[in-house]
Image: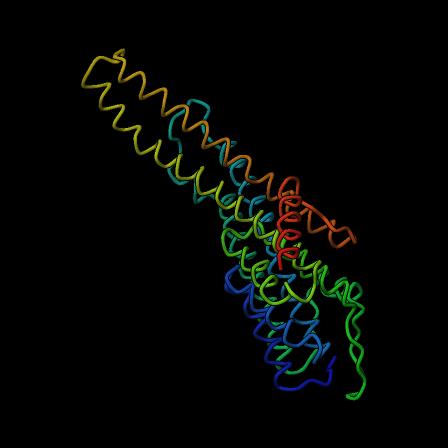
Length: 307
C-alpha cells in the first residue's frame, strides 16, 4: 500500500530498517528517527518504531532460535558418538544430519537480513511495509493506519509510543554492550520531556550496565583460571603433587572457575528478567527492577529536588 510521504520521511524509515544489519550497534538510529519524525510524520514514526522493535524484540527471538539450533545440534552430535569413547568417524561434523543444522543457521541469518532489506526498499518507494507478525500487532498497539489523503493527520498513541520505546530498551538487554545504546539514547533525547521515559531509560541503563559487568567479570575470571591451570599442572609435574603450593594453586583455580561459571550461568536469568520488564511496561505497568528501580527513583527525586 502506498502512503503519502516526503523524501525525508522515506529516508528516515529506510535508514532505520537498514540499521538492523549493524546487529545491535544501529539500535540508536530508529530512536533518533522516531524523535525527529514523531510530530512530523506518522508514517515515518511508525516505521522507525517498527524497526526499533525488530532490533530489540526481534533480535531476542532470533537469538533464541539460534540457541535452539545449537542445543539440537549438540544433542544430535552426542547421540551419534560411538559408545566405546573413541574418536569414531572423523567426518561426523560434516555428516548429513549436521549439514541440516548448518543450513538452518545460514538460512536464519539470511532471513534476518532479508526482512530489513525488504522494509528499506519498500519505504524508499513510499510503501507502508509491515514485518511479519510484528508489524500488524504494533500498528494496532500504536493506533496506526495509513492515511488516504495528504492533508489528513492523526498522531500515534503517545502513551503507547513511549511504552514501546521504553520496552525496547528492556528487550535490548540481550544485545551485549550495544544494547545500552537504546536506553542511553532515549534518556538523552526524552529525559526532560517525559518523566516516565526518564525513569525507565535510567533504570534500564543501570540494569544493563550491571548485567554487562557481571558477564565480563565472569568471563575474565574463567579465562584467567584456564590460563593459570597449565602453570599449576607444570608445577605438579616438576615437584611434589602434594606440596602446599601445588594444592593451594589447584584449589584456587577450582574456586575461581566455579565462581566464574556461576556468574555466567546467572546472566541469562538477568536477560529473562529484562524481557519480563519490557512485557510489563507494554501492559501498562510502571515497572521497577528489584533494588535498582528504588535506587534510581531516590536518585531522581534527590536530583529534581536539588534543582
